[in-house]
Structures are given as C-alpha cells and as structure tokens.
Image (cartoon, rainbow, N blue to C red):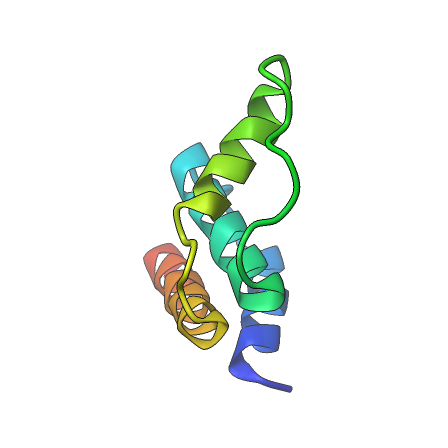
Length: 84
C-alpha cells in the first residue's frame, strides 16, 4: 500500500471532522493526485457544494499528481497529529 492509499484510509479514522476549508483541500488534493487536472464543466450556480469542490480542484491545475499525493499525505498526517 502506498502512503497515498494509507492516508486515504487514515483520514476516515479522524475523530473530529475538519472544517470545510480543510475538507475542500483534501478533496482537491485527492482528485488531483488520483485523476490529474480538473475536467468537465463547472456545476451550475445552485450546486454550491459542487461548485466549491470544482473550484478547489481547478486551483491545483498543472500540479503533478505525485506532488498532490504528497501534499495529501502531509495534510492527513497533520490532522492526525492535531488529534493526539
């Protein structure tokens, strides 16, 4: 199992739900690390959550998937350390 895959498991064990800004960062790093640059159309204006997710992912445009995976792992490790 890679450290990226392990972090995906570890994030599910957090006892406190991170704030929305951290959740969006986790989502964007995960998507960039697993799928690469954002694709498709931005959700409509009434889909606020979908739009926020799309925008967060789009901000990482051009970042190498390996870099996004490493940033994801570091963010998850930081969240786990805060709980201890």
